[in-house]
Image (tube, rainbow, N blue to C red; front, top):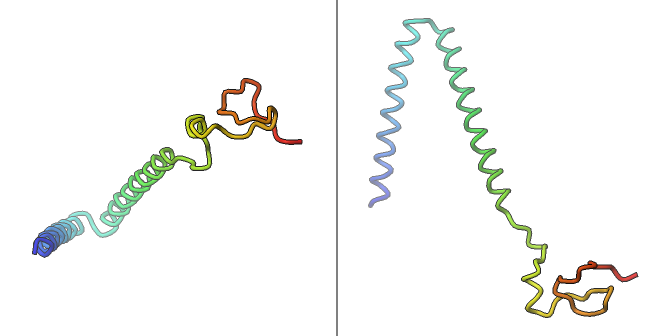
Length: 105
């Protein structure tokens, strides 16, 4: 029931907006001519597209910057399990080896 009321309200808002835009368009064309009206309409449409594009690009960038790579291992992830095999020492290391990791030759 609530969904139908929301749909009806949205329809009424859209219909009102369409009527207002139509009345404005007719008055603007009569006042300044079709060429001037279309030029202004094109400018507003271009600004709208640019603004929406920048918003979408910003949102995608925000989401991409907050993504975490699941392949990386932190020291805290491997320390409780005893660590990973350090090929240089031949022992399990929790990442505290100051010399670093070396692959097996």
